Amino acid sequence: MDYNLLNIFIDAVLGKNIVLYYILGICPLILYKANINKILSICSILTIIMVICSSVCLTVNNLILIPLKLNYLQILLILIITYLIIHYTKILLSSFSPALSSLFDKYTEFFYTNYAVYGLVFLTVNFKLKIMSGIMFSFGSGIGYLIVAIIFMAIKDRLWSGYKTGHLKRIYVELIILGLVSLIFMSITGLR
Image (cartoon, rainbow, N blue to C red):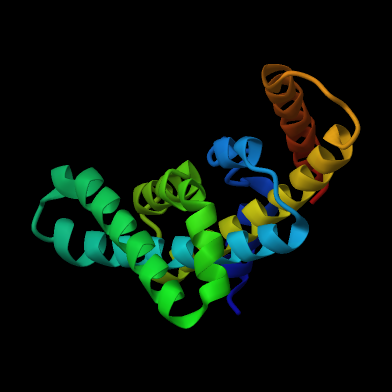
């Protein structure tokens, strides 16, 4: 493996985490509460969607939009392609894995309105990454999202298991916890 690709992967997981650095995909983490097994399934589907979306959008951008000087269609095409890939992933899951399909149906907003997916695709296109670099960045971002989701859901479950309060107060506390987790991740990346 190329050293540069490994750097891109590690930087996407720890250094420039999609949730903690770019502040994308926070809403589903705050809105939903799930156990670790569901989070693993959801984030694995999300990682696959991220990798497919960014590789397809990078290919379309590099082979069609840039040579034809149609850069003004970039945002529209990225949104349409990403939505279609998420929709066809749902169709494929319903035909191959009923358990994952029911999970997809239960957490539909987690996939369709997750800004981590759309933001990641915009980042890979705007960074002008090559296809392999974009795939590694997307895969690393998906793994980073998984790590943050597991940490955050475990803290959230432990924190709210015996405590009764209003939903609005919980959101404030959860955002503060995400900020503290972000500081921890920044201190880890400062050591390398």
